[in-house]
Length: 550
Figure (tube, one colour):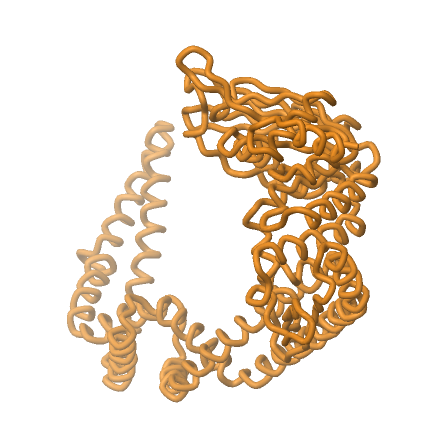
C-alpha cells in the first residue's frame, strides 16, 4: 500500500507531499490542474522511462519518492532474489537530471528499471483513461482470464517450452537446408574425397620426393663428383688420407720429446678417423647412385599428382591437402548420416510438441473453468450499474497452432440491450458502457489478485447521475479490502471517498505551480458543491453536496 508520495521539480510541481491510507481516496481538480502530472510521476516511480523535458528547473534534479507498506504482501522472496534489503516500509525513489541521467533506488540500493517494473507489478495497478479501450483488445482479455484462472506459473512453463520448440524447429530447418546442399554436392565431394584418398598422401612426403627426384635426375653429375672426392681422399699416392697417415708416422717419432708433439699426433689421428669415415660415406653414396629410370618415373608421377591436386584445391602443401581431405570426409559423412540425424531431431521435436500440447490443454481447461462464474459476476455488477439487460459471451476455442500464450483463440461478445444480437465487445459497447464493464472486471480482479493499490484515472467516463452513484458504491466497496485511489470529475463518486485531495494551480510571482491539499469536511462540501453547480456554491448545491457526503 502506498502510504506517502512526494514529488519535487517535476513539470508544474515544485514540491508536494501527500500521505495516503487504506480505503477509498478521491482526487479532484479542474481540467489542466495537474492530475495527469501526478499520475506521470507515479508512473516514473514504477519504472516508466523518463521524459527529461518534464523537469521543472534544469538546475535541480527531479526527485519522486514513494513509501510503501508491504508488510502483508509476502515479498521477502522477491527482495532476496534481487539482493535487496527487505523493509516493511519500503522506499522507492527516482532521480532524474536534465543531463539525461536517471537513477532508481529501492531502500537506498541502486536498481535497474526492469527491477523497478517487476516490483511495481506487485504493488500498484494504474488504470489510465486509455486502458478502458484495452478491454476490447485480445491481449487484455487473455490477461483477465489468466489472472482469474491463476495461469501465471503454467504460462511461464508454456513460454519456456515454446521457446525451446521454436529453437528445435530452427535447428531442423538448418539441418534440412545443410543436408539438401550437401546432397547436391555429395557426388562431387565423394569424387574429390576418393581422389585424395587414392593419392595416399603423407605429411612431409613432398619434400622427400623432391629431394629423391633431384638425385635421380642428376646421376652422372653425382657419380663424377663423388668419385673425384673418394679418389682425392683415398688414392694411395696423392690421396689426403695417405698423406695424413705419413704425417702421423713422422709425428710419432718426435712425440716423446714434448707433450705438445704428442697432442699434435693425437689430433692428426682424430682427423684421419673422421676423414676415413667421410670416405666411407662417400663410397656408400657412390654405390647408391645409379640410373633408375623406373623410379624416376614413379617419383615424377607422384610429384605431378601432388602438384595437380594442390592446383585443383588451391592448396600450398600436402598438409593443406590432408586438411581438405578431412573436411570432405565430414561433408560426405553428413550426407550419409543424414537420415539418422534427421530422425533424432524430428523425435525431439515431436516430444516437445506433445509436451506443449499437454501444457496448452491445462491452460485451456483453467480458462474454461472460470468463464461461467466470471460472466455471471460481470453481468450482475453491470446490472447494478444501469445495464440490466447486458449479456456477455466469451468464446474460447483450441487450435492446432501454438500462439504466444497457448493454443486458444479468444473472443468477447456483448449484447447490451434486451433481444439484441451479440457483437464484438469493442464494437458493441459505447464509451460509458465500456467504463462500467471495465469497472466490473477491475473489481473482480482486485478481489482475486490481492493487489495492494489500484489507481483509477476517470473510470467514470461517459456516466453520470445514478450510475455514477453506483460506481462510487463499487469503488467504495473495493476500498474495504485494498487501497483505491480515483481521479474523478463526478461529485457522486467524489462523495464516497474516505479521504479527498484537491489538485489546483496557483500563480506565484511569474510562475504557475501545481499544488495538492487534503480537504477537511467543510472544504469537501464546498468542492462537491462546485462540482455540482459549475463553480457556483448555491444553497441547493451545498445541500446536495452534504447529502452526497453523508
